[in-house]
Length: 83
Image (cartoon, rainbow, N blue to C red; front, side, top):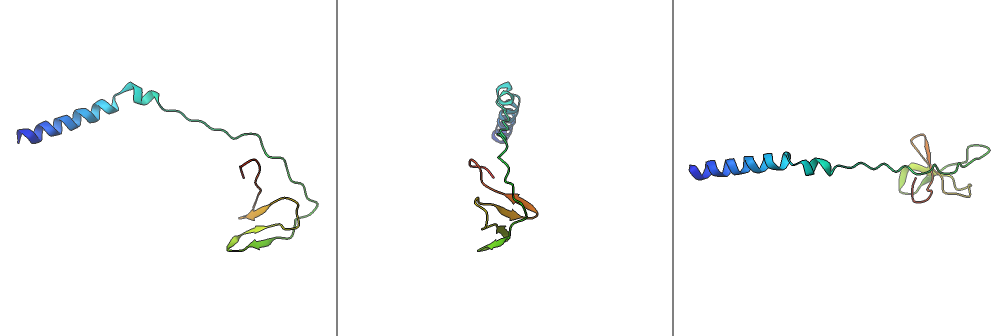
């Protein structure tokens, strides 16, 4: 019985000591790096779209000189490692 109480007190102190540590609260950081916007792609008229094989919800425009994809009413294209 005494051993069980000692274990519970030790666990409670360890939990409280870790939560009350000022260093733990100081280590929080948030970084948001959106980067510059990509250059726009301008076309005279909406291009003809073709379904991507194996992914029926995504379409692409094979007639354009760049990779442009269409999914759920939005256009996507890769630029500098981002979409």
